[in-house]
Image 1: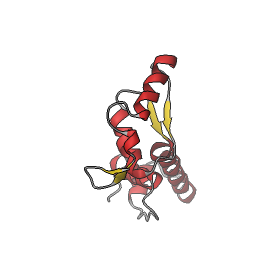
Image 2: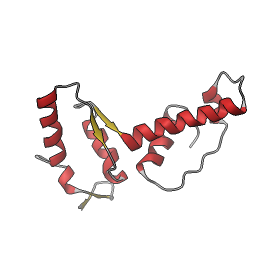
Image 3: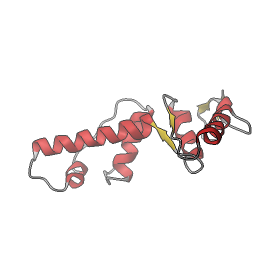
Image 4: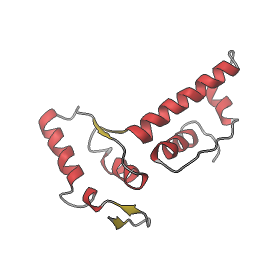
Length: 124
């Protein structure tokens, strides 16, 4: 492991020229083509966000915690609004009125927070 420029501990095997992640992803792309979905699963937050950022433009990538759990959580929040207010037509506006408390700083929580703030406009 090593310290990133942000001061977090990262796994050095994941970064730099010839790293194992890029080697695997390129091999998958070469073998299966550019429509092959490469899923990041259970990387710690210090590695998950930089890896997704680094590869999302070059490969078809998806992080289950950052994107998947966040999307399901937001869908559950919208469902809760509909249960409470069945006639509501602007679910995002209703979600913006809520206060959210996240317990822990894992990838799923951070991904959900970012989705709420950046896409739904929930104040931070």
